[in-house]
Image (cartoon, rainbow, N blue to C red; front, side, top):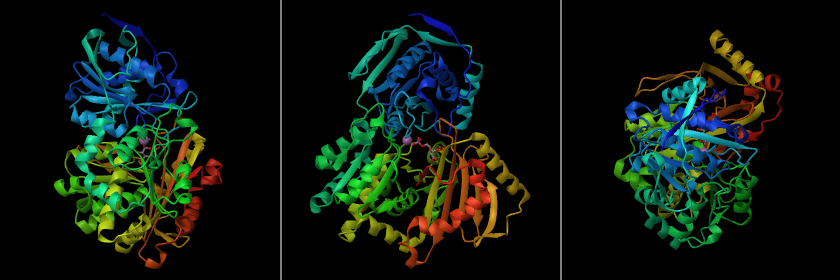
Length: 559
Ligand code: VG1
Ligand code: CO
């Protein structure tokens, strides 16, 4: 087969964000747009990882619209680049955590993930492409910067003419240029991984002894449907009524596949109306999770990772065996995890938003469990956050706690945790699709306040400012420095206001405002989050002049 060189010109804005390149499908559909980006990825695979020539790459996506076209492009450009093997999920479908697992298990060079995660899909919505390294984790900034640099100057890409590849049949096939394509069942290896981590027998035993305990898993028509079905129905033997929306759809059935109280309201409603004891959902690509309990119990992601860390060694065999080495959270995530780390005498880290910063700590064996406030929870079993893993961790905890004190609900587990550590009330306000200039000006003004230091020592609404900065992270493993990761206003009583701009949006700017307040007064533990945080939110709006800069009175989403 002969390699064809196709002339092309750069497209603006092919800069990978918090988690890969995410744009409207229509943008990806422009002639050469997707090819340019794939070529830039192939050319950026570091020589220290072996480069593209001779590489084995895992390829998978969440099934969203434009997956099929992109798969064919990847085949052609990879064959031209001398890639020796592509391992692809059946129909191209593999969840993000399952890709991470496959890269590690198959000792691949890396992986290409075709997803825009929780962003809506379909012809008028989003598509995305992300590269992961041989450790199974998202490419670090030096690689994503390299990809971006190449896209700015690209003049040609290389392709080979090969017939359209059929990804609907399992098995191995050869394409031109001596490349092998192996189509695999993207679910099987992942279930094996879960069996290695969790005690399936103990969980089955719990369900056997608690016949009335009802679970509801919501696949949100994203990639985790087949995983959830196989796990809950086929492996754990729960009834079909334990799962919903388990068929991956290219447009997620028109829904926004983001597991939070707003977008997963179908699940929330059913759990509360139909008397389920435990409800859980995952996002489009399967790396996020939401955990709820009966009677409106809601586990904030910040509490979730803390609670998992608290019980890990007792409730989950993987941690019983390997121990828990250290804990980490993203900067905006609440301090609940820190209290657990202190109590257990573990190292703990605060990293910028986005999963790529946890990988180095895990590779260096300094972090075992980590999480983000944005419904991301995970551990060093792979290098992505892992929705179904988090759900299994919670079911393991419920089984464990119920052995000690039968009848313990999700609500009880939360209250028990607060009684040990105190409660960090936490909420995030998102202002989506605001004017970019207004958002930038607002951040610039806050940076001025940091530089002048004029708010430090002052009291606003009863909260005294202790420090104010723009978060900067020094990676303790590779020494790299990531600056401007978000404005932090930290108060005397450990309360915090954090503000940053999203790096995953595909349209306009999204302002994220995070507020957090600690309480160690048991009488307050059952309080409503929004009520508890109201005074601090008022301070945040007053200090940031958010309404003036964005024109928004109300956030688009509150989580
Ligand atoms: C958001 C979240 C961040 C998460 C990222 C990717 O980023 O805040 O915590 O890691 O999405 O999640 P940003 O830059 O928009 O705030 V996913 O499930 O989209 O891979
Ligand atoms: Co996701």
